[in-house]
Image (tube, rainbow, N blue to C red):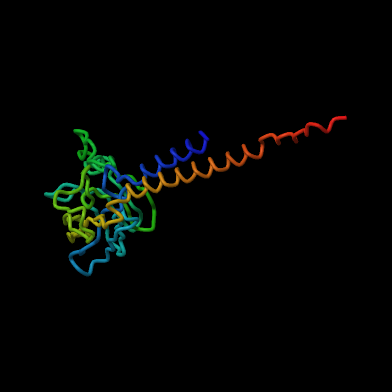
Length: 234
């Protein structure tokens, strides 16, 4: 009896852990957030920008001039990625390269970062680059303060801009982050439902196992010997 109960308890623990929300709610780690492209300005540039895999921003250069993705510097345009007709290059000594090295926060930046570019070709073609951009994701360990987790409708968290340069033309991609993890009744009570379902299944397994053991015990019980009638002995 110990073995089925132990297995069921382990399965129940795994189910509860899976039902719990992740600590970090950004990127592909959580389905509670959705990033969308609002606009790419100016219009008419041969630059395609989209969100792929739910987590990454993808720039594609569809023209014959260099496309530069600007880094996290809000004031100017720190060249971070260059998508050119002859390949895709990343400056691995840029401040943004180091800032983007951590998955759930901005990475540490060495003192000499950005002083001497280290352009490395990461691919000869095709001319696109997809990457995780901290600016378009929620980086906190808790839900945003302006979000009502009990509201199932999409809720705007913030807008964000990604600057780029095509040839000599400056551009900007505006994105929007929405919280889409608002809970309906079943979602709000998912963990409790999983727990109680597990408890009911465990009780059912216990009852079936107990019944099976009783049948086996009854089948293995010795058959009583026939009674001897007194007075028939000669």
